[in-house]
Image 1 (cartoon, rainbow over the protein chains, first blue to last red):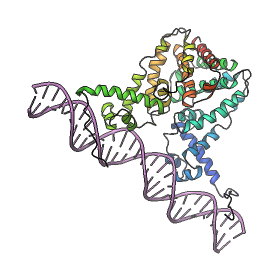
Image 2 (cartoon, rainbow over the protein chains, first blue to last red):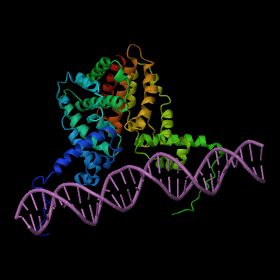
Image 3 (tube, chains in turn brown, cyan, red, yellow):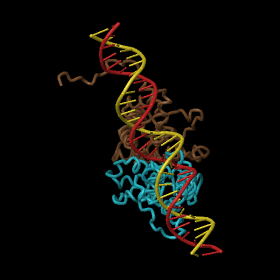
Image 4 (cartoon, rainbow over the protein chains, first blue to last red):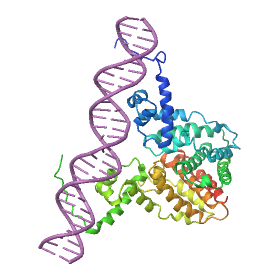
Length: 197
Length: 197
DNA sequence: CGCCAATGTCAACACTTGTTGTTAAATCGG
DNA sequence: CCGATTTAACAACAAGTGTTGACATTGGCG
């Protein structure tokens, strides 16, 4: 072991590996959000990103590696979490009950959908769990006061998750055609009650 | 390959199809609850039920047919839904925060787990949705008074779903090692706030 | 330019999936 | 007791999975 070749850090982005990585992550986020981790094959993502499936493995190491990259991009920063805590319930409720624009429904990469669609996968669930706890729950608990901040933040995450599951994953009609103002009001009150303890 | 396996296990009577159906549904409920619809193969269920995978298809028509049979048995009747509505929040919270018995954790067929673990599957989600709306939300709304009974019931379903997702599917430690009394109290209050509108 | 690592491509691997067809066995009606 | 029908068991299918290794092609730097 005379000259230990040091892992050859790419001096500069040789050409477009980073760009490709970025695009693959973007496309993968969209597809994972729509179908969930298990239901999506590497080849499907590869085709959508106009790349070879083997190249994804070469870029991210594995499918799980790609998923972690997708997660860390999806959970980058959620500006809603920095809202004043006395408005947070109303803001979250408004965000969750906002009507979907039908034409974007398919293409819009929804972080929530990514989360709940892949929460069942035994591979993806642990990765999602750490991201959720670090970014969402942690970022929320920071703004709280009083005891049990983390548990209260987690309970809010549970509310968001549950509503999103029922509305987006299970496609409940009650939130689309029902009394949306009342829904938003009830949801806001339930969230706010947890915020204030 | 071994072709000389003992194949003639003297099974019981002729009309054992119904009994087999029942057993298959039972073990399928357990396995689906643990891993979700997509992640479980027919062969796994078949092996657990000591039956051939082809036999499941012959009995239920398809994998989706088996799943519908599982659903209609799992959502038979939930006695919790008939509780007095002024205690319902506390009862649901107690049910959701109850400590898991480690030895049963694996085998106990949990309807909630079945629901949330398979909610992501594009095949299973519609089937689950109708069962959830008919049995759970419908059965809950019956006991409510005042306006928007169904939406309020759906919001409670969302809360149950979300908490169960975070605790069981994502395995959040906050509910296992955290202040469980406080968690239960906060959850009960949030649910009850929706019940009472 | 020439070298060589980085970037792509192709095919194959070993495996699993749901489903079907074809057998063999078992059981009851007559 | 015989034959018909149900129940069961295998094997095979076509398709899809993540991953790997062997090749071709490039592009930046000495």
